[in-house]
Length: 161
Image (tube, rainbow, N blue to C red; front, side):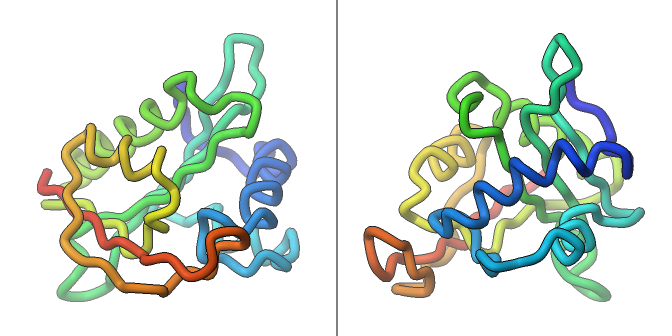
């Protein structure tokens, strides 16, 4: 089940966020980010939205946020970020989070969704985004320092709504 996140969900979101960001292999976030700064960044305010994926027993197993990609003349294009707990990947949770964000973006009146910085080494995310209709519209060579693969490209991915 996907639902809107509440401030009370942050203690369960933080370990997912921290593990993924500290690994420094998928997100262009500072791996040394503190919890307060992470909460401020992840828990977006309306008109954006932060969600959680909740297991049958109520455990938070994933999270997403979504918002206008740019302000002003670019605010008709949405963007989003997705994180799934390490032990729960490959179970359709990421797909559910992405599908929910696409539905939200359509209902909120956005005309497209765009991801500005998808590490090309994050092949599972790239594959998922392509499965739901995103195409790569640009590649910035060497723009992401992967801890094992070295400098890899960042992809700009887009899909109309």
